[in-house]
Length: 425
Image: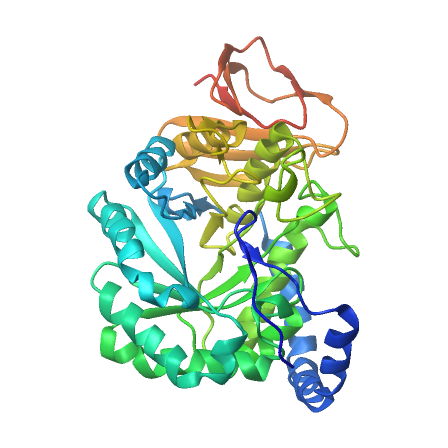
């Protein structure tokens, strides 16, 4: 099947130019590929479900040390304003970023190099995501040259490379998992030459059936998922019965069961698009939320993912963007959205702390932490507000965006907007 590749510069993703009927016919012609995938899923499916049950039982019951580099944010070069992007990352306390390099920009690598070396010189750790299009599946020699050009140029400053991107969506140019294997294998041929660590398989959304056939063939150093949960609104909401926490556990279980050797898992992309942003939003309808809801969900998803002890790092996509970023770039004077303050506050408070457990309180999410001699809790509700009485007197309360208030006794109203509650020694 052939169709032209069209990039949507407003939403930072391809247009879906192939009609649905043509996509369906094309998939039907590949029935043998799907049967081979079903075989791998049947072999690993039941053991992965047993492992999932084990992970679910231990989630939020074991200590997790929160390092600053667990809270990662993607970023992109911005002509004439790269220094401003770097300054914003540092202001937020971000020490790890992911930068996309599309194959169709192989002749503009110097643009990415200027940005990447600026990030590196400012002490920000790098991961590069390599984006593909349909032509790359057929022009394997050109794709391999692109990989080698990127590796040769950046291996001295960037250790991690995510191979391919959201390939389980046909608009990204890949039509089945065997085509993804064909794209990914040259990177493994080159890994030793440049001393790289490879990240993948970069499957988007809740489609973990694609992991067994890919991870059995490709020994990634970090297992990645672009695990969006925005379709159902809040991360605690269920999609087909699966909440964000349940999806995280299933992702890790399937990855550990399928991989040649179990390893660390990363969520390399997630966000909530913003209502009222028109053509700049990457989604239409229900996924779009207000700026305050975006800030709430950002904190809640980071906490649900990282406190599970199953996810090593999470990347918000991305720092600066009109339709979903933490900084709005529609006007010449960039505006920090509530999500930016929420991220900065969360990183500042949680970095260097240890998660010690989750309270069993109906209707509320209460995560307990210890940082040096101080005990505190991050708390919110996924439903209506409620009054909760803590077992210890509250000394002060830090709001989602960093505003502070003195504590009064032990009782506190908990709402959908997360709070950090510090207890008296």
